[in-house]
Image (cartoon, rainbow, N blue to C red):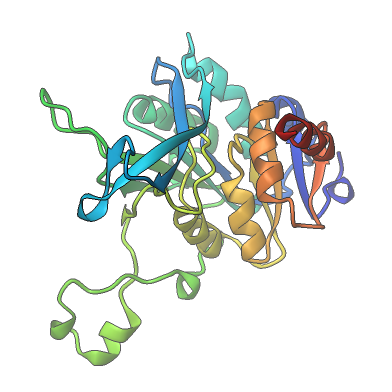
Length: 298
């Protein structure tokens, strides 16, 4: 693959290591990756639809009853005997393909982040470590024998610590907690986010939800892409999952290259980009899937 071979927007069904090895060195300004977290257990999400019904199986707002319809369940195994050995060759390739002024965001959680950071310090050098972003949320069950884990970790590395993109004026701002103390002008503008981001997960009943087990919110990816890339530049996500990186990049006028080895993930992405004429699928035919889905409905 050469620079000219990378189309405006591509989605590959492939082993990401094979695709990474085909990308020219120094050609990608922004990489975001959200690999499996190595939880040691299968991940699944069930999509449901609720409709108002007097004999429904659940109670909702103001005591009204609703009937639940299961739309489908997505699953994948999230367990690796040697997680670092799995990630290392992919991160070495990520460093190789990263532009000299490029940035990589690696999305993990508490289970592996400390070990992976040591490995990234060796690949990128410790001087290239820019930030550890804490994405904090408050959703789901709460452990009773320890502090409940309600955050993810996003490690940020740059190719050159003296030369990288950071568009501070393009970053979405947050409201002041005490706007009366800063004056009306500052309060209206809002404040810059810190390295701790409070952001809800994808709402279970929101239209953003695809049903993919590990889908990340568009708001998180929009912030990353605005800050660390420029319009027209290429954004790479080689653990693409539900394709949120591509959706955010597309909205913001960037090109994208997404890779995943799961046909289920490609089916989700095909649905998300079904109205986009400038997206090319490689190794996967979304039209054949659409024909199959129509046949199944009949």
